Image (cartoon, rainbow, N blue to C red; front, side, top):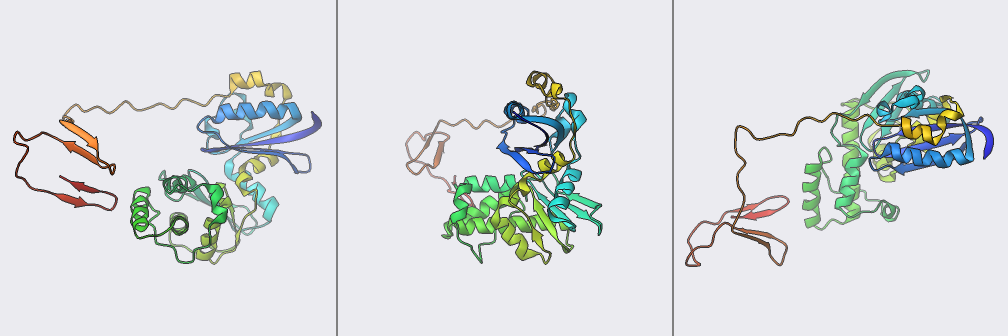
Amino acid sequence: MNKMGYSLGVDFGHLFLKMVIIDSANRVCHQLYLNHQGDAAGRFKEALAGILKNYQIEKLGITGGLVSSVNGFLSDYTVDQVRAQMSWVKEKFGLVNNIFDLGGTSVSLIELDEKGEFKNFISNSLCAAGTGSFLDEQATRLEIDYQDLCEFKEIKTPPPIAARCSVFAKSDLIHYQQEGYNREELWAGLCRGLCRTILRTLLKGRSLEGATVVIGGMAQNSEVLRWLKSMVKAQILTSKDAHLAGALGSARLAKPVELSKLEIEEINLSVEFKKQERRPKLELKRSKYPDFKVQEEFLDQLGNEVRLSFFPETNQMQGFLGIDIGSTSTKLA
């Protein structure tokens, strides 16, 4: 075990767990960026067990979108997320005017004054438009692996894709796929539309002025950075560790912690995420749900769903054919 005292910074994000260890000179000794898949507490305990075998942790700082859900003794070591991000940005870039935090489930803008102090904070609503999870959903739909993006060519004029809503985006993707656009062009269009949504959400028509640092998971997306730089006059800055900004900042602002409290047995008893109350299940009481049962249903050779309500006695019948040609499917009845 390294006997030198270290500071541990933890960022409990909604999608990713970030952990960073720094020494007394603020040098990064260890870092972790992990998709916790909904079990942030469990992944944290697993990672902490390995860290305690190799490092003597003397200070602890915890921040992130899920930090309000942490209870037990760890709640004494929470650090305000904006304060943690500002601390790292100031150390890394000096005085800047704005910070864009582009994460998996939220995007936000931190405005700073001429002294680098907090001035204003703007965030998106609960809608996922403009966030990393929106891009993840569309990438899955296009069967794009993020490791393949480094091989994508730069597309100067991609198709316009409505990124203000995943439903509209899906319709546009299907439409442009049918017109023959490839995955590289569609991905560029998605990223351009996403950047427009981000700027529209956070700036609300205002111009972005002064040096702006991009942090969060999407800071690793070169296509998003390219379109952001093309859409604003402000200087856009970032770094390869910008996705760890919250953890790095909380490590710098960490509070002294007793090693005995960090024993993994104590963690197992103390680290639990508060259970969120759920609303009662919706039930139909004043109306009836229609019965969609049919006499026969199957998929044809092309994978189309066929549903037969009844068979005519003579195997022939006269009727009317209705056709609905939609943007994503065609229906006949």
